[in-house]
Image 1: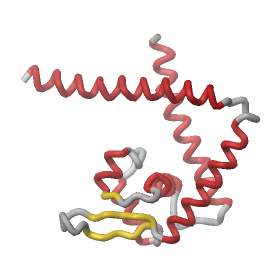
Image 2 (image 1 turned 30 degrees about the vertical axis):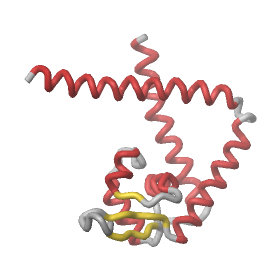
Image 3 (image 1 turned 30 degrees about the horizontal axis):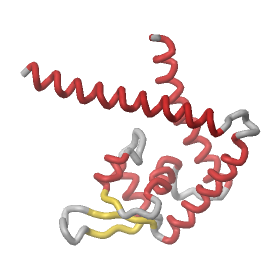
Image 4 (image 1 turned 90 degrees about the vertical axis):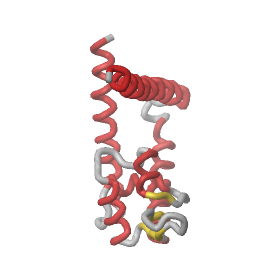
Length: 157
């Protein structure tokens, strides 16, 4: 069990890096140079929502990067609009601008092209559903491990 578990951890990391390369290639193909692959993934995941930086972080819409920096760069480059929350002046809410919505649509089109090619690559809908179920179990395991760790630290004190 040890080796398959470790292999899964390495594969998840490698798949994420590969996907970011796919996004970078798509941005290059579109001639878009004022946003990077991580930022475009954050942008895609914001979608039609209006969120705070804290909500972006909590939802995991960034991966190994500084979300505040990325939001700042996307605002500077016109992909996001931002406004202070009327309820909490310390909180800034962001949403996609028209430019951001256009890029989101282009990324959506890339996903549609990929979905159309999955079967040719030997991946069925059922296989992906099973993979996702396994990944969610692993996510729950890691989350419960964190909860247990926090519990065991406070219990020992």
